Length: 87
Image (cartoon, rainbow, N blue to C red):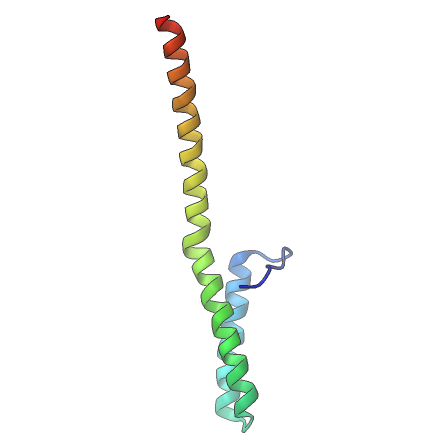
């Protein structure tokens, strides 16, 4: 969605967006500024959902892909060594 600020961890951003969303909902309940609060809550909800999805699904998927690539490279190396031994 947006480019991430690299000075914060993804987990910290997730907590920040969640707290921001809760504060926006609280502000909607306590004030009469509905239009800006609704727009802000929609934006905060999008940021919050996107950051939690990134934290819970995308980052672990990238780690699994890296591990699988290492395994594939190791298998290719072993296969190449085996072929050289056979010849």
